[in-house]
Length: 415
Image (tube, rainbow, N blue to C red; front, top):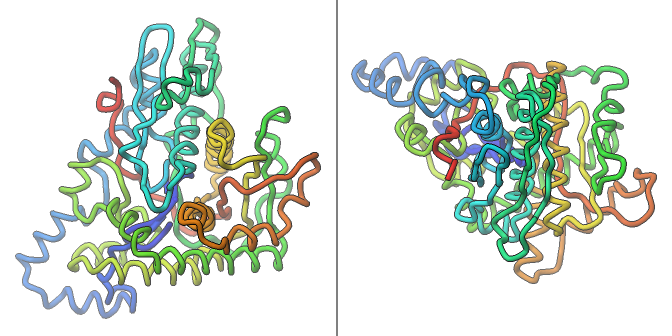
């Protein structure tokens, strides 16, 4: 799901998400030394209140993070939903709810959680739903069930995106299932080091050869440079589009109270900043959406695109087809879990495809679709027929660990 990245409002996770609108908290970004000096002379009462209100020590308590602590606890179908809610989704919108019985689970879309301007056709929403579906399938197997998945089983109900029939079976644990509770969208810097030899081939093997989704990798200096330039330009275009910028900013949770109230969205802790910078930023007043947009573009230019060891892009025959979007989400989640299991990092990079869909929705001359096609991704696929990008992400060795994002627990999303 889904996913930008500013220090306050990231975008992404249709792959857990990626945008950071809230820092400036702006002086923090000019250097931690000035921030520390400033804090030293602020009244202790105000500092103490800000520290309390914004969870200075990080998201370690509160019901908004209980889902990460208890996802293995419950058996049966409700336990499967507890694992599903930890999946990636765009801007951590969590666009799902579930109907549960002893023998089946229905996965339903919540269209009220789709962002209109960034996701006019529901591409990101359905990719996020596919991510949740993959977690659910892995959890079913680990709890002694054999899941049978039917995508879009009822044409008369577009909200019903999948029905999972459950039959008793042997327990099937896996490294991917074990990684569910550790997966994060890591928006911080990645180390200047290559990925393990053969790792991208291992990730490619996670794709179903008979399915509609094909992963391709950009690993050469030139390919990464071209992809990075396109990502930076797309980030600038998103921030220049008032509707897209405002829709993303609505999902930023600027305080502990907002995090606990909503249990979703993007937080300062999730932006991949160092611990000192994050702590100082929490003590300072929130700044404007425009300042956050500027910071996100700078992070995209100086951190995200400068430290990626590789980019991945999932290609499909038709990125507008709901079934292919769901299948892409399932593969995206498998890849992210495999990356997590190896101690590596992944960040969802949605800005290019958001601009592609935005141009189409407004009937404008396309800019980013042709530029993305010019990268020659389809030529990397040894398969008949044309392919287009569904989602993109970056990979690397993390400099620091990603942090948890708030989650609505299973009890709040089961009908």
